[in-house]
Length: 460
Image (cartoon, rainbow, N blue to C red; front, side, top):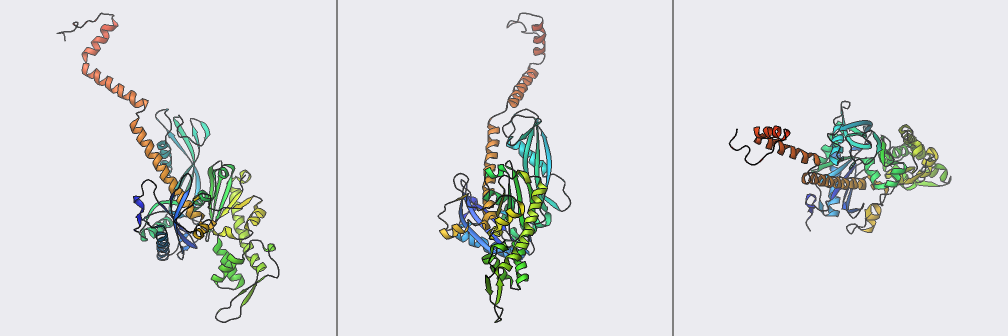
Protein backbone atom coordinates (compact mmCIF):
# COMPACT_ATOMS: atom_id res chain seq x y z
CA UNK A 1 0.00 0.00 0.00
CA UNK A 2 1.43 3.39 -1.01
CA UNK A 3 1.76 6.07 1.66
CA UNK A 4 -0.76 8.87 1.57
CA UNK A 5 0.35 12.48 1.24
CA UNK A 6 -0.55 14.72 4.18
CA UNK A 7 -1.65 17.62 1.96
CA UNK A 8 -4.20 15.44 0.09
CA UNK A 9 -6.31 14.98 3.20
CA UNK A 10 -8.86 17.78 2.74
CA UNK A 11 -11.98 16.89 4.72
CA UNK A 12 -10.20 15.41 7.74
CA UNK A 13 -6.55 16.53 7.44
CA UNK A 14 -3.74 14.58 9.05
CA UNK A 15 -1.72 16.47 11.68
CA UNK A 16 1.85 15.71 12.72
CA UNK A 17 3.42 16.77 16.02
CA UNK A 18 7.19 16.93 16.53
CA UNK A 19 8.38 17.07 20.14
CA UNK A 20 12.12 17.86 20.17
CA UNK A 21 12.98 16.99 23.76
CA UNK A 22 16.21 16.65 25.72
CA UNK A 23 15.88 12.88 26.16
CA UNK A 24 13.70 11.89 23.21
CA UNK A 25 12.46 13.04 19.81
CA UNK A 26 8.81 12.06 19.44
CA UNK A 27 6.71 12.25 16.26
CA UNK A 28 2.95 11.78 16.58
CA UNK A 29 0.58 11.41 13.62
CA UNK A 30 -3.18 11.78 14.01
CA UNK A 31 -6.41 13.42 12.92
CA UNK A 32 -9.75 14.60 14.26
CA UNK A 33 -12.15 11.93 15.46
CA UNK A 34 -15.57 13.17 16.52
CA UNK A 35 -15.87 15.97 19.06
CA UNK A 36 -12.69 16.81 21.01
CA UNK A 37 -11.06 13.49 20.18
CA UNK A 38 -7.81 12.62 18.41
CA UNK A 39 -7.29 9.42 16.45
CA UNK A 40 -3.63 8.43 16.64
CA UNK A 41 -2.34 6.83 13.45
CA UNK A 42 1.29 6.36 14.41
CA UNK A 43 4.08 7.31 16.78
CA UNK A 44 7.83 7.41 16.23
CA UNK A 45 10.37 7.81 19.01
CA UNK A 46 14.16 8.21 18.88
CA UNK A 47 16.84 9.04 21.41
CA UNK A 48 17.71 12.73 21.45
CA UNK A 49 21.47 13.24 21.31
CA UNK A 50 21.79 16.85 20.14
CA UNK A 51 19.49 18.73 22.55
CA UNK A 52 20.52 20.15 25.93
CA UNK A 53 17.92 21.64 28.33
CA UNK A 54 15.42 22.11 25.53
CA UNK A 55 17.90 23.92 23.26
CA UNK A 56 19.54 22.45 20.14
CA UNK A 57 23.25 21.96 20.86
CA UNK A 58 24.17 19.79 17.86
CA UNK A 59 22.18 20.23 14.64
CA UNK A 60 23.48 17.13 12.84
CA UNK A 61 22.71 14.76 15.73
CA UNK A 62 19.25 16.32 16.16
CA UNK A 63 18.51 15.95 12.43
CA UNK A 64 19.53 12.27 12.55
CA UNK A 65 17.19 11.67 15.53
CA UNK A 66 14.30 13.51 13.83
CA UNK A 67 14.69 11.46 10.66
CA UNK A 68 14.79 8.24 12.68
CA UNK A 69 11.60 9.13 14.58
CA UNK A 70 9.85 10.28 11.36
CA UNK A 71 10.72 7.00 9.61
CA UNK A 72 9.15 4.97 12.46
CA UNK A 73 6.02 7.17 12.49
CA UNK A 74 5.65 6.92 8.68
CA UNK A 75 5.94 3.14 8.85
CA UNK A 76 3.23 2.89 11.53
CA UNK A 77 0.79 5.42 10.10
CA UNK A 78 1.32 4.82 6.37
CA UNK A 79 1.54 8.61 5.91
CA UNK A 80 4.17 10.57 4.00
CA UNK A 81 5.13 13.23 6.57
CA UNK A 82 5.93 16.65 5.13
CA UNK A 83 4.52 19.32 7.50
CA UNK A 84 4.89 19.29 11.30
CA UNK A 85 3.77 21.27 14.36
CA UNK A 86 6.94 21.71 16.42
CA UNK A 87 7.13 22.08 20.20
CA UNK A 88 9.55 24.62 21.66
CA UNK A 89 10.87 24.99 25.22
CA UNK A 90 14.13 25.99 26.92
CA UNK A 91 15.27 28.46 29.53
CA UNK A 92 15.37 31.27 26.92
CA UNK A 93 11.56 31.41 26.90
CA UNK A 94 10.11 34.58 28.47
CA UNK A 95 6.62 35.99 28.95
CA UNK A 96 5.26 39.53 29.35
CA UNK A 97 1.83 41.19 29.73
CA UNK A 98 0.72 43.90 27.29
CA UNK A 99 -2.46 45.81 26.41
CA UNK A 100 -3.80 46.52 22.94
CA UNK A 101 -6.54 48.88 21.66
CA UNK A 102 -8.57 48.81 18.45
CA UNK A 103 -11.01 51.59 17.47
CA UNK A 104 -13.53 50.68 14.77
CA UNK A 105 -15.33 53.05 12.38
CA UNK A 106 -18.78 51.72 13.28
CA UNK A 107 -20.75 50.07 16.08
CA UNK A 108 -21.28 46.84 14.16
CA UNK A 109 -20.60 43.51 15.81
CA UNK A 110 -16.99 42.55 16.53
CA UNK A 111 -15.76 39.81 14.23
CA UNK A 112 -12.91 37.33 14.27
CA UNK A 113 -10.98 39.53 11.83
CA UNK A 114 -11.08 42.43 14.32
CA UNK A 115 -9.54 40.25 17.04
CA UNK A 116 -6.90 39.07 14.56
CA UNK A 117 -6.02 42.71 13.82
CA UNK A 118 -5.47 43.29 17.54
CA UNK A 119 -3.28 40.18 17.78
CA UNK A 120 -1.25 41.07 14.67
CA UNK A 121 -0.55 44.51 16.21
CA UNK A 122 1.00 42.77 19.23
CA UNK A 123 3.48 40.97 16.96
CA UNK A 124 4.86 44.43 16.07
CA UNK A 125 6.02 45.07 19.66
CA UNK A 126 9.66 46.07 20.02
CA UNK A 127 11.49 43.43 22.08
CA UNK A 128 15.07 43.40 23.41
CA UNK A 129 17.62 42.56 20.67
CA UNK A 130 17.80 38.88 19.81
CA UNK A 131 14.24 38.02 20.93
CA UNK A 132 11.22 37.02 18.85
CA UNK A 133 7.52 36.66 19.68
CA UNK A 134 6.26 33.05 19.58
CA UNK A 135 2.68 33.41 20.88
CA UNK A 136 0.22 36.25 21.51
CA UNK A 137 -2.52 34.92 23.80
CA UNK A 138 -5.59 37.13 24.43
CA UNK A 139 -6.92 37.31 28.00
CA UNK A 140 -9.83 39.58 29.01
CA UNK A 141 -11.38 42.12 26.63
CA UNK A 142 -12.89 45.55 27.36
CA UNK A 143 -15.56 46.75 24.91
CA UNK A 144 -16.58 50.42 25.12
CA UNK A 145 -15.29 50.59 28.71
CA UNK A 146 -17.14 47.40 29.72
CA UNK A 147 -14.41 45.16 31.25
CA UNK A 148 -14.13 41.42 31.90
CA UNK A 149 -15.43 40.14 28.54
CA UNK A 150 -13.94 36.78 27.51
CA UNK A 151 -15.76 36.15 24.21
CA UNK A 152 -16.01 39.47 22.30
CA UNK A 153 -16.90 37.98 18.90
CA UNK A 154 -20.50 38.84 18.00
CA UNK A 155 -20.83 41.74 20.47
CA UNK A 156 -21.49 45.29 19.31
CA UNK A 157 -18.87 47.91 20.06
CA UNK A 158 -16.62 50.59 18.67
CA UNK A 159 -13.57 50.54 21.00
CA UNK A 160 -12.01 47.14 21.78
CA UNK A 161 -9.23 46.78 24.35
CA UNK A 162 -7.51 43.55 25.39
CA UNK A 163 -4.88 42.22 27.76
CA UNK A 164 -2.38 39.89 26.10
CA UNK A 165 0.01 37.27 27.44
CA UNK A 166 3.00 37.42 25.07
CA UNK A 167 5.56 34.60 24.94
CA UNK A 168 8.95 35.23 23.34
CA UNK A 169 12.13 33.25 22.76
CA UNK A 170 15.70 33.74 21.61
CA UNK A 171 15.92 34.20 17.83
CA UNK A 172 19.01 31.98 17.45
CA UNK A 173 17.38 29.05 19.30
CA UNK A 174 14.18 29.38 17.26
CA UNK A 175 16.22 29.46 14.03
CA UNK A 176 18.23 26.38 15.10
CA UNK A 177 15.01 24.40 15.65
CA UNK A 178 13.70 25.49 12.24
CA UNK A 179 17.04 24.61 10.64
CA UNK A 180 16.89 21.11 12.12
CA UNK A 181 13.37 20.64 10.74
CA UNK A 182 14.37 22.03 7.31
CA UNK A 183 17.44 19.76 7.16
CA UNK A 184 15.15 16.81 7.92
CA UNK A 185 13.19 17.63 4.70
CA UNK A 186 10.19 18.80 6.70
CA UNK A 187 8.26 22.07 6.87
CA UNK A 188 7.28 23.88 10.09
CA UNK A 189 3.54 24.57 10.18
CA UNK A 190 3.60 26.23 13.59
CA UNK A 191 5.91 26.63 16.59
CA UNK A 192 4.03 25.83 19.80
CA UNK A 193 5.22 26.35 23.37
CA UNK A 194 5.40 22.90 24.92
CA UNK A 195 3.56 23.62 28.21
CA UNK A 196 0.64 25.01 26.16
CA UNK A 197 0.56 21.79 24.12
CA UNK A 198 0.78 19.59 27.23
CA UNK A 199 -2.05 21.54 28.88
CA UNK A 200 -4.37 20.72 25.95
CA UNK A 201 -3.65 17.00 26.42
CA UNK A 202 -4.05 16.63 30.20
CA UNK A 203 -6.32 19.47 31.41
CA UNK A 204 -10.03 20.02 30.85
CA UNK A 205 -11.94 23.30 30.67
CA UNK A 206 -13.34 22.85 34.18
CA UNK A 207 -9.84 22.75 35.67
CA UNK A 208 -8.68 25.75 33.64
CA UNK A 209 -11.70 27.73 34.84
CA UNK A 210 -11.26 26.74 38.50
CA UNK A 211 -7.53 27.58 38.49
CA UNK A 212 -4.78 25.05 37.88
CA UNK A 213 -1.00 24.79 37.52
CA UNK A 214 0.41 22.49 34.85
CA UNK A 215 3.93 21.24 35.63
CA UNK A 216 5.57 19.33 32.76
CA UNK A 217 8.76 17.68 34.05
CA UNK A 218 10.85 16.79 31.02
CA UNK A 219 14.39 15.56 30.60
CA UNK A 220 16.08 18.97 30.46
CA UNK A 221 13.45 21.48 31.58
CA UNK A 222 10.39 21.77 33.80
CA UNK A 223 7.64 23.81 32.14
CA UNK A 224 5.00 25.68 34.15
CA UNK A 225 1.67 27.06 32.91
CA UNK A 226 -0.94 28.64 35.21
CA UNK A 227 -4.60 28.93 34.15
CA UNK A 228 -7.47 30.76 35.86
CA UNK A 229 -11.01 31.43 34.60
CA UNK A 230 -10.11 29.54 31.44
CA UNK A 231 -7.29 31.96 30.58
CA UNK A 232 -3.51 31.45 30.58
CA UNK A 233 -2.10 33.71 33.30
CA UNK A 234 1.56 32.77 33.69
CA UNK A 235 4.20 30.66 31.91
CA UNK A 236 7.75 29.78 32.88
CA UNK A 237 10.49 27.34 31.91
CA UNK A 238 12.78 26.07 34.69
CA UNK A 239 16.16 24.77 33.39
CA UNK A 240 16.07 21.62 35.56
CA UNK A 241 14.59 18.23 34.69
CA UNK A 242 14.93 14.48 34.93
CA UNK A 243 18.43 14.41 33.41
CA UNK A 244 19.93 16.32 36.32
CA UNK A 245 18.44 13.72 38.70
CA UNK A 246 20.15 10.99 36.67
CA UNK A 247 23.43 12.91 36.87
CA UNK A 248 23.09 13.21 40.67
CA UNK A 249 22.59 9.43 40.93
CA UNK A 250 25.61 8.79 38.66
CA UNK A 251 27.86 10.90 40.88
CA UNK A 252 26.33 9.96 44.22
CA UNK A 253 26.35 6.20 43.60
CA UNK A 254 29.49 6.12 41.36
CA UNK A 255 27.79 4.22 38.53
CA UNK A 256 27.56 4.59 34.75
CA UNK A 257 25.02 6.99 33.29
CA UNK A 258 22.82 4.28 31.75
CA UNK A 259 22.88 2.41 35.09
CA UNK A 260 21.88 5.61 36.90
CA UNK A 261 18.93 6.04 34.51
CA UNK A 262 17.78 2.46 35.12
CA UNK A 263 18.08 2.91 38.89
CA UNK A 264 15.93 6.06 38.70
CA UNK A 265 13.24 4.49 36.52
CA UNK A 266 12.99 1.10 38.29
CA UNK A 267 13.69 1.89 41.94
CA UNK A 268 13.56 5.68 42.18
CA UNK A 269 11.35 7.40 44.75
CA UNK A 270 10.79 11.07 45.59
CA UNK A 271 10.31 10.28 49.31
CA UNK A 272 13.14 8.50 51.12
CA UNK A 273 11.01 7.68 54.20
CA UNK A 274 8.69 5.54 52.07
CA UNK A 275 11.51 3.00 51.49
CA UNK A 276 12.82 0.23 53.77
CA UNK A 277 16.27 0.52 55.36
CA UNK A 278 17.38 -3.02 54.45
CA UNK A 279 16.42 -2.91 50.76
CA UNK A 280 19.51 -3.13 48.52
CA UNK A 281 20.09 -3.13 44.73
CA UNK A 282 23.04 -4.97 43.20
CA UNK A 283 24.65 -3.14 40.24
CA UNK A 284 27.06 -5.12 37.97
CA UNK A 285 30.71 -4.00 38.05
CA UNK A 286 32.57 -2.66 35.01
CA UNK A 287 34.59 -5.22 33.00
CA UNK A 288 34.69 -7.98 35.57
CA UNK A 289 34.90 -5.81 38.68
CA UNK A 290 32.97 -6.67 41.81
CA UNK A 291 29.22 -5.82 41.76
CA UNK A 292 28.19 -2.74 43.73
CA UNK A 293 25.43 -2.71 46.34
CA UNK A 294 23.28 0.42 46.61
CA UNK A 295 20.70 1.12 49.32
CA UNK A 296 17.26 1.98 47.91
CA UNK A 297 16.78 4.49 50.73
CA UNK A 298 20.07 6.26 49.92
CA UNK A 299 19.05 6.35 46.26
CA UNK A 300 15.76 7.99 47.30
CA UNK A 301 17.59 10.60 49.41
CA UNK A 302 19.59 11.65 46.32
CA UNK A 303 16.45 11.89 44.18
CA UNK A 304 14.41 13.66 46.87
CA UNK A 305 17.02 16.41 47.34
CA UNK A 306 16.93 17.34 43.63
CA UNK A 307 13.14 17.01 43.26
CA UNK A 308 12.67 19.31 46.26
CA UNK A 309 14.77 21.93 44.46
CA UNK A 310 12.68 21.62 41.27
CA UNK A 311 9.40 21.84 43.21
CA UNK A 312 10.67 24.90 45.13
CA UNK A 313 11.31 26.60 41.76
CA UNK A 314 7.78 25.70 40.65
CA UNK A 315 6.34 27.02 43.93
CA UNK A 316 8.25 30.29 43.45
CA UNK A 317 6.64 30.71 40.01
CA UNK A 318 3.20 30.03 41.50
CA UNK A 319 3.71 32.65 44.21
CA UNK A 320 5.18 35.25 41.84
CA UNK A 321 2.19 34.82 39.47
CA UNK A 322 -0.18 36.12 42.16
CA UNK A 323 -2.59 33.19 41.75
CA UNK A 324 -1.45 31.03 44.68
CA UNK A 325 -4.79 31.43 46.50
CA UNK A 326 -6.95 30.92 43.39
CA UNK A 327 -5.89 27.40 42.37
CA UNK A 328 -8.99 25.35 43.20
CA UNK A 329 -7.93 22.52 40.84
CA UNK A 330 -4.41 22.46 42.34
CA UNK A 331 -1.34 21.18 40.50
CA UNK A 332 -1.25 18.69 37.62
CA UNK A 333 2.11 17.02 36.94
CA UNK A 334 2.88 15.46 33.58
CA UNK A 335 5.91 14.61 31.42
CA UNK A 336 8.41 11.79 31.88
CA UNK A 337 9.39 13.01 35.36
CA UNK A 338 5.80 12.56 36.58
CA UNK A 339 6.34 8.77 36.59
CA UNK A 340 8.59 9.02 39.66
CA UNK A 341 7.07 7.22 42.67
CA UNK A 342 5.70 9.31 45.58
CA UNK A 343 6.15 12.55 43.63
CA UNK A 344 2.54 13.66 44.26
CA UNK A 345 3.03 13.34 48.03
CA UNK A 346 6.26 15.38 47.90
CA UNK A 347 4.61 18.16 45.85
CA UNK A 348 1.66 18.35 48.24
CA UNK A 349 4.02 18.37 51.25
CA UNK A 350 6.16 21.27 49.92
CA UNK A 351 3.42 23.44 48.37
CA UNK A 352 0.38 22.56 50.44
CA UNK A 353 -1.63 22.40 47.18
CA UNK A 354 -3.60 19.38 45.91
CA UNK A 355 -1.80 17.46 43.16
CA UNK A 356 -2.49 14.74 40.61
CA UNK A 357 -0.71 13.09 37.67
CA UNK A 358 -1.90 14.22 34.22
CA UNK A 359 -2.42 11.40 31.69
CA UNK A 360 -3.05 12.30 28.02
CA UNK A 361 -5.72 9.62 27.52
CA UNK A 362 -8.86 11.75 27.87
CA UNK A 363 -8.78 13.01 24.29
CA UNK A 364 -7.52 9.82 22.63
CA UNK A 365 -10.02 7.95 20.43
CA UNK A 366 -9.83 4.20 19.83
CA UNK A 367 -7.77 3.43 16.76
CA UNK A 368 -7.33 0.40 14.53
CA UNK A 369 -3.87 1.52 13.37
CA UNK A 370 -2.08 0.80 16.68
CA UNK A 371 -2.09 -2.42 18.65
CA UNK A 372 -3.31 -2.44 22.25
CA UNK A 373 0.19 -2.45 23.77
CA UNK A 374 1.30 0.58 21.71
CA UNK A 375 -1.97 2.40 22.45
CA UNK A 376 -1.67 1.78 26.21
CA UNK A 377 1.92 3.07 26.17
CA UNK A 378 0.71 6.36 24.67
CA UNK A 379 -1.43 7.00 27.75
CA UNK A 380 1.79 7.63 29.69
CA UNK A 381 2.56 11.24 30.81
CA UNK A 382 5.70 10.88 28.68
CA UNK A 383 3.62 11.57 25.53
CA UNK A 384 1.57 14.52 26.85
CA UNK A 385 3.44 17.09 24.72
CA UNK A 386 3.31 14.98 21.54
CA UNK A 387 -0.45 14.45 21.81
CA UNK A 388 -0.96 18.08 22.82
CA UNK A 389 0.81 19.21 19.62
CA UNK A 390 -1.77 17.24 17.60
CA UNK A 391 -4.65 18.87 19.49
CA UNK A 392 -3.18 22.36 18.92
CA UNK A 393 -2.80 21.54 15.21
CA UNK A 394 -6.45 20.47 14.98
CA UNK A 395 -7.54 23.67 16.78
CA UNK A 396 -5.55 25.76 14.28
CA UNK A 397 -7.37 24.07 11.37
CA UNK A 398 -10.77 24.67 13.02
CA UNK A 399 -9.91 28.36 13.53
CA UNK A 400 -8.88 28.63 9.88
CA UNK A 401 -12.21 27.10 8.82
CA UNK A 402 -14.16 29.60 10.96
CA UNK A 403 -12.07 32.47 9.58
CA UNK A 404 -12.81 31.42 6.01
CA UNK A 405 -16.53 31.10 6.78
CA UNK A 406 -16.57 34.62 8.24
CA UNK A 407 -14.78 36.04 5.19
CA UNK A 408 -17.24 34.29 2.87
CA UNK A 409 -20.29 35.51 4.79
CA UNK A 410 -18.95 39.10 4.84
CA UNK A 411 -18.55 39.04 1.06
CA UNK A 412 -22.03 37.57 0.55
CA UNK A 413 -23.91 39.86 2.97
CA UNK A 414 -23.22 43.61 2.68
CA UNK A 415 -23.47 45.57 5.93
CA UNK A 416 -26.00 48.39 6.52
CA UNK A 417 -23.26 50.96 6.13
CA UNK A 418 -22.24 49.54 2.75
CA UNK A 419 -25.87 49.55 1.63
CA UNK A 420 -26.25 53.21 2.74
CA UNK A 421 -23.04 54.11 0.90
CA UNK A 422 -24.41 52.44 -2.22
CA UNK A 423 -27.68 54.39 -2.06
CA UNK A 424 -25.74 57.61 -1.48
CA UNK A 425 -23.51 56.94 -4.51
CA UNK A 426 -26.56 56.29 -6.70
CA UNK A 427 -28.20 59.49 -5.49
CA UNK A 428 -25.02 61.52 -6.10
CA UNK A 429 -24.61 60.03 -9.58
CA UNK A 430 -28.21 60.81 -10.45
CA UNK A 431 -27.73 64.34 -9.15
CA UNK A 432 -24.72 64.90 -11.38
CA UNK A 433 -26.62 63.63 -14.42
CA UNK A 434 -29.63 65.86 -13.79
CA UNK A 435 -27.43 68.91 -13.03
CA UNK A 436 -29.28 72.23 -13.39
CA UNK A 437 -32.70 70.53 -13.66
CA UNK A 438 -32.50 69.01 -10.17
CA UNK A 439 -31.49 72.33 -8.59
CA UNK A 440 -34.19 74.26 -10.47
CA UNK A 441 -36.82 71.69 -9.52
CA UNK A 442 -35.84 72.02 -5.86
CA UNK A 443 -36.39 75.81 -5.93
CA UNK A 444 -39.68 75.42 -7.84
CA UNK A 445 -41.06 72.90 -5.33
CA UNK A 446 -40.03 75.15 -2.41
CA UNK A 447 -42.15 77.94 -3.92
CA UNK A 448 -45.15 75.58 -4.02
CA UNK A 449 -45.55 75.60 -7.84
CA UNK A 450 -47.58 72.95 -9.65
CA UNK A 451 -45.53 70.76 -12.02
CA UNK A 452 -46.88 69.06 -15.09
CA UNK A 453 -45.18 67.05 -17.83
CA UNK A 454 -44.90 70.00 -20.24
CA UNK A 455 -43.55 72.58 -17.80
CA UNK A 456 -39.88 72.52 -18.90
CA UNK A 457 -40.15 71.36 -22.48
CA UNK A 458 -37.83 73.40 -24.73
CA UNK A 459 -36.45 75.52 -21.89
CA UNK A 460 -32.83 75.78 -20.79
